[in-house]
Image 1 (tube, helix red, strand yellow):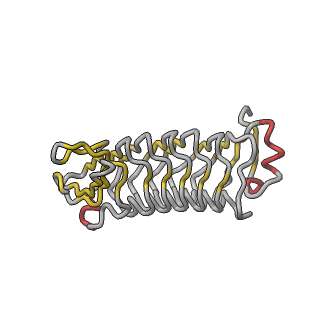
Image 2 (image 1 turned 30 degrees about the vertical axis):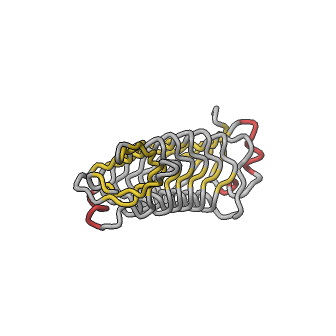
Image 3 (image 1 turned 135 degrees about the vertical axis):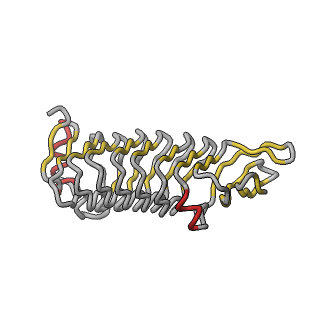
Length: 231
């Protein structure tokens, strides 16, 4: 089903639709909460990971709004959308896939809603203009190198809910000066690799009762200094 450049697969039994491809001319893409086809309403619960297959379309997209019925952002969904400057994530998205926003060179800020529990590996790799990241308070997992080479990032706060963190999450974030982790128990990692490796010194701020816990755990002990949030 094609509606103004939006191509959908519909499931008539479950009354849901998946956005498969966008071929429209607008630089702004809106993934709606629902569509109406033959007088029947279908909830748009998903979109294809290769939504922007056409390179010309991919390079033109500047703004994307994801509807509140969508439940996940798949691997590579917006990879290489170099003109993307604004993304609004719907309130039902629970996961952000690997490399989902990798190479979005002009994306400057993002708000990850409270519905999200997992951020995949390389999710925001090479988002060189990304200077503001707000992570919702239910994220439990952050994958390997999730914020790799976010060169404009100077500070970030990780939520209290965080339980697992990958290796080299801030690799190459050469302007990052502080990381605040609100989790009272140091999130675990499968790898002892340096979570903060970059050219500059980074201070880790944690709850005052948790300093010794962080200082004794990989990968957190690799930070240049660990201080109380209240200091």
